[in-house]
Length: 193
Image (cartoon, rainbow, N blue to C red; front, side, top):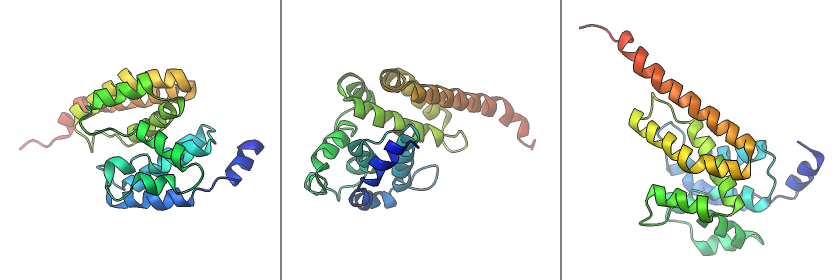
């Protein structure tokens, strides 16, 4: 971490957003854990890529709140601190709206999203791909998720961060390799009746 990054993070007041993200504790993930931990993973990925923008980091902590729980309101977020309005706006950019298909949602972020929305979506997808394993998810789901990543998130990463682009491509390659491994090896490991 660079000195200027450390100085910026010293000024970051994250506690109110962490408190709001605790609403995600009850939302479990198929891979284990819960959405609360996923929020911290997304936050950590942004830090790993040297993002120190307070609005982006605060939004990462609550990026799934409006999709996954109903107990948090716009007013609660905008009143948290001076960044609240901008944090809320960014979260809404990366929140799937009622009636919006997954493709429409990702296309909207790709074509209309701000740079921070695309960065946040890339970090979110890195976290999700890290947790995407063939022993937990159906092969067709994994293939569809990889296709979505190629169609929408890879172009976002091409716009905002070539290092995230590299990681996304590497994760895709590893997940596809896992599918091939499972497809070819699994039948050999089964016992004959």
